[in-house]
Structures are given as C-alpha cells and as structure tokens.
Image (cartoon, rainbow, N blue to C red):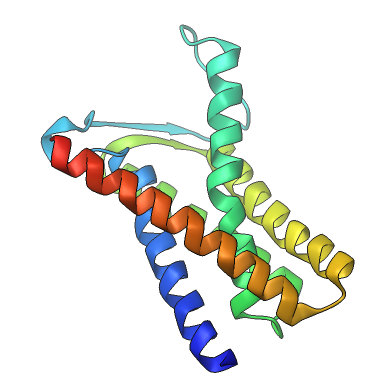
Amino acid sequence: MKRKSNHFTQLLFFVYLLLLIWIILFKLQFSMEALDRGRALNLIPFHYGKGIGGAYHFKEMLDNVLIFMPMGIYLQMLLPKSKFYTKVLVIAGTSLCLEIAQYVLAVGRTDITDLITNTAGGFLGLALYGIVNRLLKDRAKTDKLFFVIAVVVSVLFVGLLAVLLLAN
C-alpha cells in the first residue's frame, strides 16, 4: 500500500510541477500569442519601479509564497531521508531555473524578489509538514493527510483548468 501511494504522490508532484511551469512561465495563458513578450531583469531585492503600487507587489509576493509551499510539502513526503538543506536547495534551484527560463524565453520579469519569495514559500511548506508531523506524531498519518489534501486541490485545479479550456 505504501509503495502505491508513493507512486500517486509522485504523479501528483509531477502534475504540480506542470501547473507551476504553466503559472510562472505561461502566466495561465493558453497560447503563446497571448503572452506579454518582454525581457526584464531586477537584481535588487524588494525593489520596484515606478507606476505599480505596493499592494500589487505584496499580492505578487504572497502568491509566490503560496504557489511554492506545496513543493516543500511534496519534498518532505517524497524525500523523507534527505537533509533539510538539500530540500531547500532543490526549491531554490527550481525557482532559479524558472526565473532564468522567463528571461531566456522573454515571457516575464526575472526578479530576485521572486527567487526569495518562492524559496520562502517552499521553506514554509517544509516547516508546515514538520509542524503537522509533530502534532500527529506519525509520519504515515501526516503523509496521508497531505496526500488527501493534494488530491482534492489537484482535482479542483485540473477541473477548473478543464472548464477554462472548454470556455476558450
């Protein structure tokens, strides 16, 4: 049973990664023509140019944290014996690759703040898993809880995606 649920967890993680790429690189668009084409690079943390207000940036930072939290949870489930810092490096490396891809493909703003907030989100996911695991005092129960949550969220998100595809 454990082996089978681990395969499903791996499948859900793969779906999550595809959705993450779609969100970050393709900005929830269904065609390349709909993307804002442009290349921008910001290497100053939490620095924003003129024109867009602070509330927008706070929302964007919160979104970045939230979309990377599942990565931390999945890594805790899939790599239980890996060291904590290794998981943080995987999260930061994934974020860095996506930021570089945005720059190379000219599909968004490559921003050090995104790298920081994405990594913070993954870190919070790692921490959340640890807290829940301490409360439940049973790794199998913790995995099962997060697996059920992942299934529900994945089904809802993929269902929403299907509705959006049919509407277009």
